[in-house]
Amino acid sequence: MSETFSATGRRKTSTARVLMTPGSGNITINKRPFEDYFGTLSLQNEVLHPFQVANAVNQYDVTINARGGGVTGQIGAIQLGIARALLKTNEELRDTLREADLLTRDSRKKERKKAGQPKARKRFQFSKR
Image (tube, rainbow, N blue to C red; front, side, top):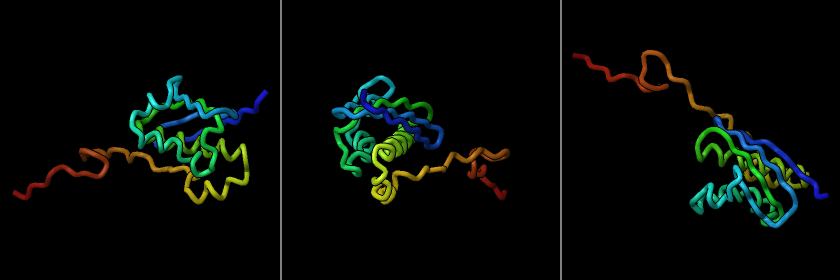
């Protein structure tokens, strides 16, 4: 039986659970082909970026469960999850993935709205007269 590598990636409010098995390069996100889930080519390239850095394109079948957040947050979470799973397959990829900034968790979150203001930092319009 082939070995399965699993990892979790997070960004903003998104979480992606990644299961990776040696295979032919099929990527499934939330039980849909990733070409359907991320319609544009640039978004698809973002998902494939960790594989391109590690020279592992079409070597693994990936099943991803992405929850929460929006498109950008989910892509960031998926990238981190794939990079962490690739690290489990081959520890020597650590330096390459680190240089491409794929192993760093982006901890930035949306700042909370403050009372007496319309948004987190925006103020209501000031009128002197």
